[in-house]
Image 1 (tube, rainbow over the protein chains, first blue to last red):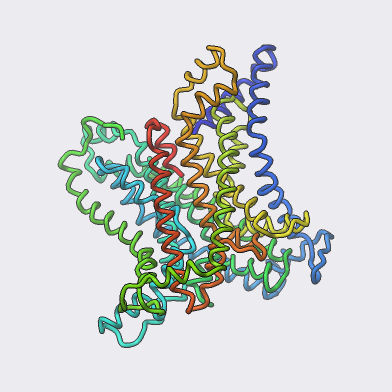
Image 2: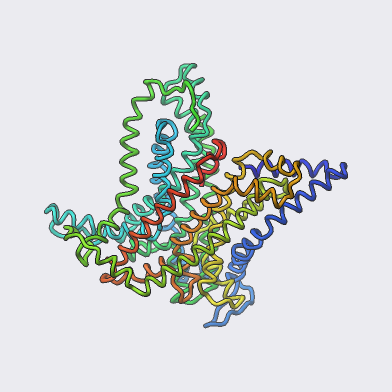
Length: 315
Length: 281
């Protein structure tokens, strides 16, 4: 994207700005004109994104009694989650572990399945590339709720698989293990987030300079060596952004555990939602959301760093 | 795509591509088959979602379209979607023009803030806006849903429009300014017509994102229901399922048509360089 080049030239100009009067003035006015244009967008993002997140942080240090909020700052909510022997503490860790492991498996499965497709479209499809890309993109834009719901129909007690197998006479009674467990969540999410994996990986594969592969071939590398030493390391940015784009939002998914997870498949988002519904404890909900987000963020940072290190060793 | 002459797609690499092709086609089936069960059962003459299929009927569509609450929810979604799409595309256009045409200090940070909603789970966005609207005493309604959806869809509009802005020759704008047109007239007579396919594409895509969005509408809607929230509320009534499937099938078809149109507009005429950037989202 063009922004890195822009910010680079802006920082260069900051150095020379003090000396050249006219030039500095011009650049400053470019800044002013740019931000004036961008202003309305930034204002909306402040109102609807930054301000709510700041309030979320404040709320997590407040206390709620009935319908009144006590704005004395306290760490009690975080103590309840991390230190004290409370039901919140046990629930948070159970659901956090479940959310992270389900999302981890989903991320792994989705990326592993998506890579060959992205590779196929980037390197082997020539004539109908556009068609393939559209076909792979459409599910990305269609209703998430309906895509998740489709799996409830398929895996349900009276669902497509059970009633299909029964009417074919293969089974006598419906299989109960299909729905309402972590596996059904993994299947559903791997399907719902497929496009998020394919597109970033495809972009990074498409960008690879083909002459590098030619050079390796000329120097005697076989197809596998070429793939592991050139294509795979160069596609890492796509793989990493796909993994982050899937892992972070799925740890906070609410719809899928609610529809296909059953009681043994509740995840962190369901616990957070309860604080804003039945339990009516907004500060606890805020603290749970921020704790989850912070830990997920830490996991992402460490995993990405470890992964980068491992891949650079391959090269 | 650009023709790359003399690739290494020699016989050596041509063989494994058959295995890959079979895998790719199987994957497409995995991608589309589950969703196809919605229209299949919406046309099935049975109140139960199960095999064997009973016979063809359109009565679930009649039932869906005569459900006043469902139609009201549909209208709500259309309103929210239209206002969000127009607002997000307008805001995206301003920001895209700013970052592609001006050298700005901190433009990268500003872009990062605008793109942030893509990286935060929707539940966090939803609950934090509930807190804000409560703090400023703005009752939850379609208005608050729309504010949430504008925030959520601006990144999509930005991504589409930046690619489009980068994709055409900037000297056209400079020529117009040199020849004496004002900045405003240059925008209307040069920039706007060139960016128009991107604008239409952005309108369609942001509309679809808002129209299909569930969780933020669920948190911010109060008693007002958008179509996904209404569908959600009906999922626990088995008797309502077939008509919900009928409406779902209609939504899927409409979404597909809009997406194909939007993608076609987005990719048409954009230079190869910009195309690669645009596919990323």
